[in-house]
Image 1 (cartoon, rainbow, N blue to C red):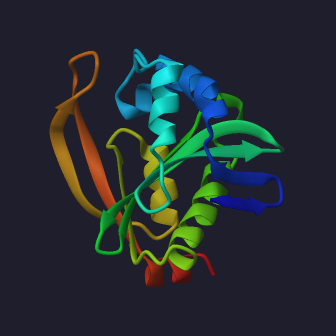
Image 2 (spheres, rainbow, N blue to C red):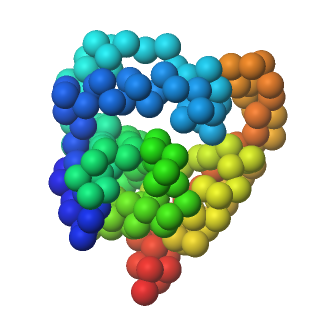
Length: 176
């Protein structure tokens, strides 16, 4: 995947990206929203091995660039029956809350619907992540359910999550 729009690029992560992904994934400040306030204990080699198994038809880790500098990551996973699950994380805190995540999501979702032929996009987020929920709902995602106290983070604290879905028809109407 390679999507360019003005100053933004979404591209497939390569083995060369393992180091930057590792830096982000091991950083508790970056990963706290995903339930990993201590970061993820993973080596660059393990990340490279995972990236080498990526396929367009299965799952793919992506790099988001702003002005040709990596600022975060996205991913997608084919769930079958025309459904794809996505995730996004703007890892450069200086680039958060500037609308870049919304723009990147529009680019990715458009490609998944138009280029890959998916009919539905699903995702989940922490119930406390109100900023992400606002972005998802602005793009047309519909809240499917709230999973209260359904998992524990690394600090053994109960967490809740929100499941969202978006169909091509709703997305097309929301971005006009």
